[in-house]
Image (tube, rainbow, N blue to C red; front, side, top):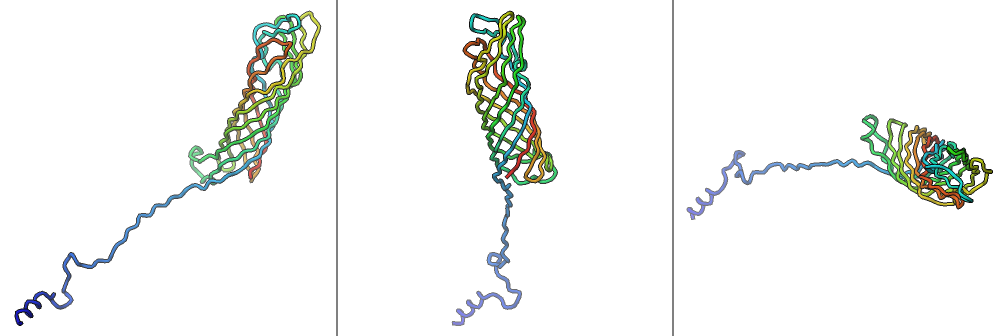
Length: 261
């Protein structure tokens, strides 16, 4: 009995405050470490813009090449006549609407190319009027067309970015169709009487445009200025005209106003 008590007492830890647990069983204050990652995403939103633009359009391109001569009842035009000779610089306007994905307002400072642009699509209805001019070849044949009214419709891609504060710029490319109406012209070969002939037949054709603008905002309203160009597929000559017209190009200078929603 005495032996058992002695053995048991030898297993007990020594008394007092200096008694310590084994290092494996020591109690420590638990430490919790959390790695926090902050993701700050840009808040995009949809916005719409309606715009009205007016322009001056300069017609470019070759109506035909070679010489002009009369062959029976058919006027054969093989002379290189330019559209700028046949038509005067015209006036036109555009009605446009777009739907854009817009980023939040840019943080002041920093280069413009580091700012996220707004991007989206647009649709535009355009009409131009080109008063008839006159073209005369080396043989004295004179062609004087009537006023060309040229409606078009485009659908395309548009991008817009803030340059500084309320100053912004945009660029767009669109594809669509243009309508050549039936166009009459007065044709007078050298030494022969003047006759009225159908110069262009009524026809819808392919068209595309590329434009860029700069503008200043004052609240939801902005004033814009810009330039652009269009490529319109060639017209079809009239039944009594024999020629090979080229594509109808325009160089455009524009100004307008737009309002955002």
